[in-house]
Length: 212
Ligand SMILES: C[S@@+](CC[C@H](N)C(=O)[O-])C[C@H]1O[C@@H](n2cnc3c(N)ncnc32)[C@H](O)[C@@H]1O
Image (cartoon, rainbow, N blue to C red; front, side, top):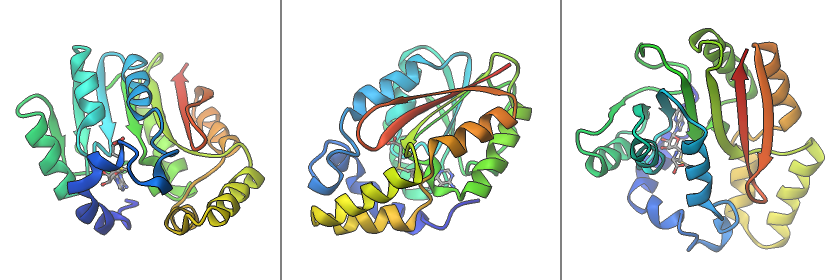
């Protein structure tokens, strides 16, 4: 579920890897430290990793480089095609999304970068509830995505994008389902996770939940 933005990714897939290099001024800050962010998520992973919203496979490759097993979940056929071509035979990448995905045996870490905001807050709560049942004690959620310290900080970010003339970015922030850290922290704690958050750039935070 939460697949309403998929048409965008069918079009964006071919040029996605150029976008993450920061050539688009509007999204330069969103993707600042992209490589470092993905490396951090990979370093915080252990055991059998499920990755949601694989995209072109950039995080998948880093997790595989650490010698871990990854099962990828990606709803966009165009994105899956690119990821599979980049990682031939190295990882299984299934059609699925944050809420609906094939049964995966004994996952230890659930990871995702730049994707969880495609779910409404209600869907995010449902997903975290599901992950609480799926993971063993010591299992982890490690997600990096755009989120805000408060509703005011979110509104300020939209205003700033408009002031800078970044109209695509402002429309994106208003259209998709960016949320706040207090909301995510509560969802994690309600489902038996110890939550922590650390800032990666002006948009992206690393959210970690450890099941206990
Ligand atoms: C901005 S890209 C991020 C790709 C990659 N994770 C990265 O960090 O470069 C967002 C990805 O999330 C996927 N996506 C969109 N809706 C999704 C959903 N409901 N569940 C899982 N993935 C979704 C898109 O198809 C796309 O591949």
